[in-house]
Length: 117
Image (cartoon, rainbow, N blue to C red; front, side, top):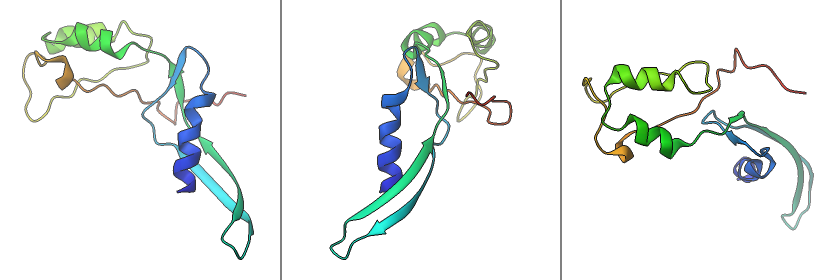
């Protein structure tokens, strides 16, 4: 419960022009005082990755019905290091004709991410 509450508070601290990525939120907490009536005090931290904000609806619109090769080219024009196109359940030469069937995920590679100070 506490980790979920701390994670829910993170979006309020994201700078303008950025968004939280789809990376899992890392949280930890320690109980510092527990009262017999059930009240507790705790201290904790939560960490998440943020990245420049992208317009996902615009991206979906551009990708809808295009070939996978065109999709890769377009994704390469975005301010991201790399983009991958995965098709499920089977690979077709074009993307869905309905934008809502295109799922976009924005993930930071923790190994290559540089911590900010």
